[in-house]
Image 1 (cartoon, rainbow, N blue to C red):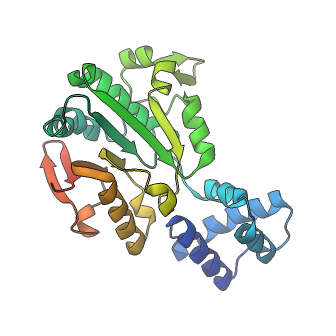
Image 2: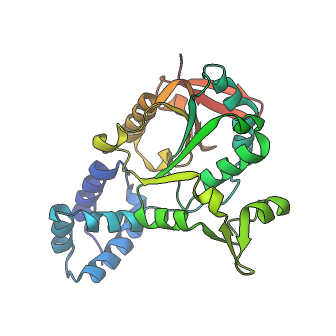
Length: 275
């Protein structure tokens, strides 16, 4: 099915209002294919019929399924590992300076996709951050895609996903199911709190406060300027004073707003909420 220019723009505006994700004209074919699949699955025969169904369906289930189809989830363990090194060698030690005994350190991974990022954080803490023996750490993994969150909870990965994990850590933290499949151990599955979240739903994002570290890598590139600014404000409100946010290597908070202070560590730049 080919969408007219006006149909594409109508859908793009609606989806942007709902999710903050903006599709440029260059993504028209990508959007068309995914909408066509959902039209067939739901038994509609025109874009207009399907679009009205999505907009007015009371449960919101079809919008959820369409969102799952339109979001890209490609990641792997220890991706951009220098940021995990920065976390355990520099960032967390600074955070401890304003923590008191009994406090919990809260780390938020969004979007967490199929779980590789929050599980990588947990492994790095256990292996390379000695204070983990005496401090409680809560790791929260959020994504808008409900299907990919179920995969994260199952914790089963293919060979490509675990390709960067040293062999001794692979043996320690994974069960080998076959030559191509590995399952994360139960202790790590229980260490991550996976939750579905639409970042731009104010009823939901207000639940995320007193966060010490945010990993938000390669999400802002899918937003337009307005959405990026909204996201930056949401993250600012979620972080404790002195908290840090990690972005993808091609992203820059300084180009979005002046709310955060860029901090240059030996491993790279991280952005900090001022005290």
